[in-house]
Image (cartoon, rainbow, N blue to C red):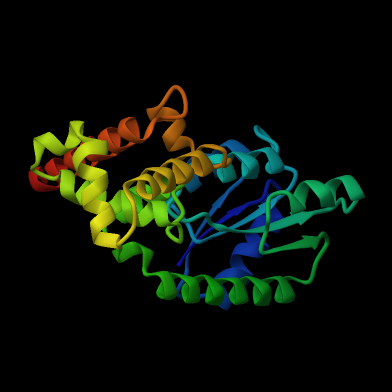
Length: 244
């Protein structure tokens, strides 16, 4: 379990580290003192839990957390937000980040540690349930691009990409060959396959927080563009893995 703590006050940060280390001895804890360091640390370490003060130097705490929420992660970290201000405006800003919980400062450090412990347990439960670290590279990439694993489009995209592997003609014959083959597999129509894939891509494009797709596409891609880019990304990942 990786936890990142962001707190500018040196004494309070040291106290938090002490309590969290005692309460969660198995956790890997890293502490930073400003918002920019927080963003960089989260991007590098991919922690399960982020504990941050809403007010940080260099980059405001809430702005840093918002940037984290906008980044492409296979799984977003749980947020624990602390603030000396509990104004309605602050509460609204905090709620928009969907934190695990929000605590006013000063706070009872024992209670805060207990809340973080509960967060860790819930994070482990979710991880074990979804087994995201052990999922297929194809599944992981589709989810990083914002495709909901619960959608029909996800299953159809998976089938399309598996069929494209090693079959050059399928990459340029979506409507004549690829869609009909996938439709037969799922006992549906080619039109339904095409429509479900398009709906999944549209829904993903309209979501915030999936910057990877914005890096790959200048505009919302067509089905064919999306399939070809994802196919080549998977090929590159496979070649990189073989070369290491």
